[in-house]
Length: 331
Ligand code: FES
Image 1 (cartoon, protein in one colour):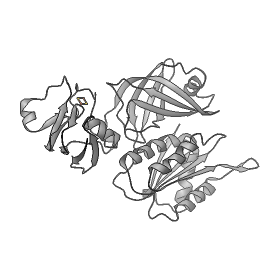
Image 2: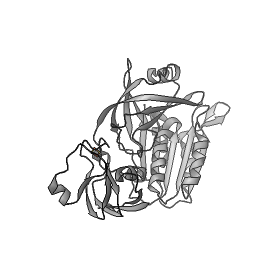
Image 3: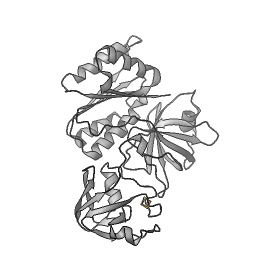
Image 4: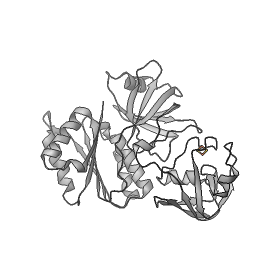
């Protein structure tokens, strides 16, 4: 049986099966409720049920006092709905709402979608997942190496299964380790999240996501979050490949057309032939040509530092107002 949950004061609504907890359903639906352990120990998911009734309450160590219970408070990670519910709770809406965390994850898989690209899959303990907003980055530390900051490429709806993208780079010891000695089950120390490159969920305007190379990683997180939220506005993903094999998850991108009402994937290459690369101005014109039919689009731009800054300047010079652009650069 499915129940409808309405959050206050945000007004977010989502469906919750009678067999899942309110927290599980909220996260799956892109609603970032305050939480910590997800196992009934920390008390961070305590929220007030304003109307409706909680059905099954799973075992928890955290003690909810009698006075709190009388006021309707319950742990969202331990409560399954017994009816439609209205719940008063705090949701993370900005980077400042998410505390910095430190945890240890394990490498569970490394995919090789192209010769020079790897997709690193990490898993956190079930009781210690990573809370982050789509588009944010995390510091990863492998034994014996300097920490490396990478954007999370997966959806915040699953803080236990995390994904990161890497391009082969002999000057990058972290990437070299992942390419040549991934050491399955190796521990990875995580710290974060960091960064303000997040979705403005209140903005109803079309989203244009412009990725250069592995700048695709935060875009993937943003799009998966947009799908979880069921955002209705058009989404355009423009992905510039800088190196051979640079559209390393192109088929995955095409599959988003099924999940979003109005989604366009535009793969472009910087190689202009005869050893010449598109200039930043030419890239900007290629982007702006895709915006023409969109009213007041919001542009999110991410990629390696130098070409991304060049493209930002070229977009500004070509007339894109600065307040309509968010940018994230990667080392
Ligand atoms: S998240 Fe820790 S008690 Fe619910």
